[in-house]
Length: 264
Image (tube, rainbow, N blue to C red; front, side, top):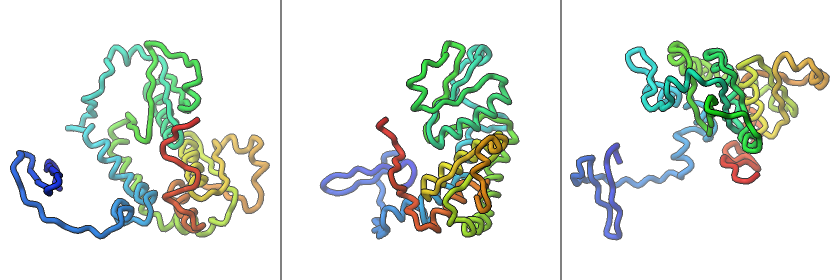
């Protein structure tokens, strides 16, 4: 089926129409792929596919917002008056989305000078947060958009591609360290938020114990756990992917994990 086409399925057969509702003939092709293989788009695992498609996904997300050198939010419903009188922002999310929220906090506070608090969704519902007509609550679920400068909008997908183009280096690092059973991630500011995501992904698909710390905090007690041979790293999702691959894990079906959490 092409964009705009319509198919009507009945017991008698299938009738196809174009976007003008004119009948059209379609060639019937038998696809002998397994469904999983078709959805992976030629990649070995879904996770690897998602990692490699991030730059293009970001482009598709951002490109409709940029027109003739201007950043546009045509469906943005918050009024200028509301934004000017806003004095607090909450970002509510879970898991990887929480780490995205932390990245958003750093950018929003730097650009707006408005206090931003990132709250775990599972905790926020039981809090009694200070929310009034001057508070903005941003809820993130699996995806989000970050307001930043034009340069960041245009630099960002290319920078992601630069990292992904070095995946052979990251695979080599993973081959050197995949037998470690305790790994620490560290970073400062935005890198700390990214380190949390790297640690989460490593635990999620390789079952290796890992923790993430702000660089300055590592020396406050946690450094006592660092001994000769302890791995402290900054490569992120791809590192986790290759480590799990080398340990023979089922990357697309990690144990005890669900994408939608419906119980407390």
